[in-house]
Amino acid sequence: ENGDWVCLKNLHLVVAWLPTLEKALSSMIPTMHRDFRLWLTTEPHKDFPAILLQSSMKITFESPPGIKKNLQRTLTSWGKEFVEGGGGDGDGPKSSSTSSPHRGALLFLLAWFHAIVQERRTYIPQGWTKLYEFSVGDLRAGSMVLDNVARKAQGGPLDFELIHGLMEDAIYGGRVDNPSDLKVLRIYVNQLYNAKMLAPGGGSGGQQQQLTRGVSMPDNFSYDTLLKFTGDLPDTDSPALFGLPENVDRAVQRAASAETNSQLRSLSISSGAASKFDREVWRSKLGPMLEMWGKTSSSLGLKEKKSGGGGDGNNGPRLSIKRGGGGGGGDNDGPVNQFIILENDMATSLCAYVDGCLSALRQVIYGTALLTPAIQTIGASLLTGSVPAAWDKRWEGPETIQQWLASLIQKSTALRGWVSRAEKGGRNGVLDGELDLSDLFHPGTFLNALRQQSARSLKVPMDETAIASAWELDRLPKGAGFVATLKGLMVEGASVRGGKLVGIEANAPEMSPAPLLYVAYVAGS
Image 1 (cartoon, rainbow, N blue to C red):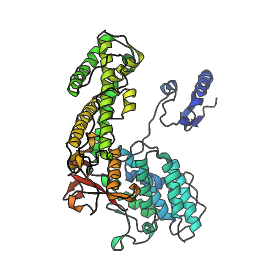
Image 2 (spheres, rainbow, N blue to C red):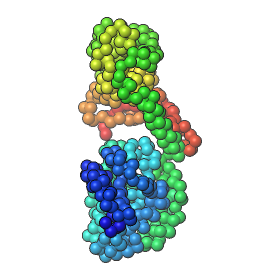
Image 3 (spheres, one colour):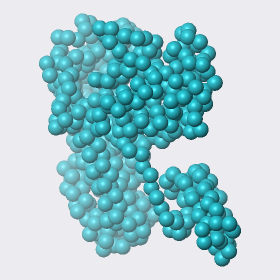
Image 4 (tube, helix red, strand yellow):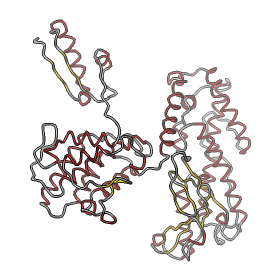
């Protein structure tokens, strides 16, 4: 009524209440003062009412990217009084402690850590596997913890165990749900928060400890010194600041391209069109795929099922390793051979199941069979380029249907070769040749089978064996069990030269081929 201004913050936290706000605004429009303004702040939210957005003038704020800008924002929000041990300003956290010898260093390490974990999001999926919402709230909670730790230490030893636990499991680690990402986070916490990092001249040659390659800890932690330190950092971050390879941008670009392709595929056929059965559309879109599979199934010796439901996929041909073959020192029923049989059976069964589903789908789109809910579900998934849920449940392979089918065919063909080599015998059976783990559905299970077979040969329990590997056969420890020679391995972010990992240039391929790797299990730890 008086033309005042009102600001409502963080509306993304109360999206369920926003319809009430809309109604209140609509009822006030006739009597609203011409100078009245309502300011709303929110983070992006999928349930934010579209009508409220459309009726508003929208302003977007995005923080400038980079470690340098991130550190400058943190120091500015804290202010000189808080950083140097005072009470802080209205926007920064309060401190009740007097200045501690380690307090400034701890706060600076927190600012650096916060900047690192936030800016690593630029390099998804290599920096992090997903976009974690590390926020100012985490920074505020971390500063309170470190302030209390410094105050309680009173110049004595710091409780690093408490710092590690809260950072890894509650404040920052509480947002991370991927084991690989959590491992990276813990490495950063352990590298930054330790007594050696805080010790003056704790680095090599009496120099300050390095925060990362080419960046050392400041000499002191006054507010002005930290501002100068931050101002001297480069405006553009290099992957080395995050411990990432120089060619990491290639992985980022590949992930972005894959996401764009996925979105374009979803636009090519809407979900509504895919779920609605149109025989002509299905025939034109799926016909080439069905023809390709028909030729492939003939080469694999699969029999088309006459039933329209796709069958259970358990009536395919089963290959077995004959007695008198190899398989590891004459152990024809050894774990490795049994694993090969199971893998080949899975390939045969899965191919037969897929063949049955596609045969039933072919009959439907060519008008020789009736459409069933199961076939419609499979067809709708194939139209959008995704793997049907029933297929993915049997084997979690590539995400796109073309790659999934190609990988299934490749594995099925290769596994028949594994069985054939095992049947031919030899001192170590299939282990006498070079093996490609990409031929297998469960490569981890293969290593477990190798471990079990090695334990039998070494006459020790499995839990008393340890894996050993080397780029050169003569570098394996003496007394190793059966040796598997692995080929087709790729190294990401580095290359192997002369049996050693070396760095790569920014224009290097994303993946580099690795030489043969020799793997065996030995007795002991």
